[in-house]
Length: 292
Image (cartoon, rainbow, N blue to C red; front, side):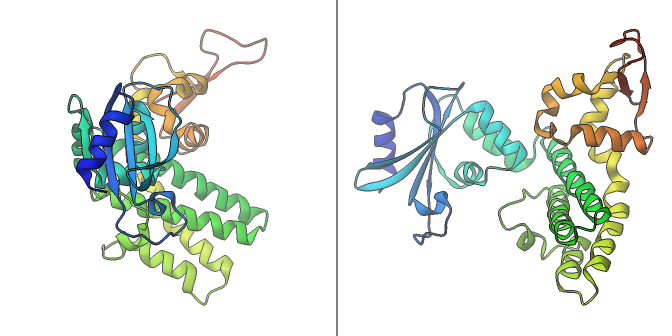
């Protein structure tokens, strides 16, 4: 299907209220289990706000089957930020822009590729939050002698570390993260090989990686938590965990936020106090957090 024909189909068949659309042509016709690869063509349609369209539709038209993905602008921005939906990212970055009503889709793509504004800092923050969750899970599994679960968690933690290393170098993590870091001068790839290929016992390998994580990543906890630190310093009144979890900037890390707060407090990077003017009930006080 030629792009011109696809654009024509879009013009007459997709809701006119859409602010933009991107057509992504898959170069590999072999099915490998991923929907973005199963269809020769994928059409990403972006709306200003949430619209009454199914999120995913499989369509036959112009002698071709293709996948139609509908997202709001906010969903697209969140997907680019958290990096979890590789299908949407691939369509946007590698597809052909066939409609862009006011230029915001092309601007969003340029900003994403250049790490414009606070994007880099925010992605580092999200990556570190995920790293910390897997790191703590590893230590918990070791404490309970769940060796295979500890191995799985530390592997995930290393992958998050690899993503952080890429972001530090202004490289967006993609599907094959370990291939991306293979040519970089970074310890994380060597640690991954030590974890998976070393002749040491499984416990020794996991403990080695935990030690490396402690010195190489956790030592930069304050730097990678910059968005959270900025919020904590934004007012005189310290924050409760409930208030922080309601803050829009914390939405991508809601699952990890309580853990991050406690780790930052434990390391005295942030501070806590109780009994700030109000009380839940006699003998109960909110713990509030602040940064100097």
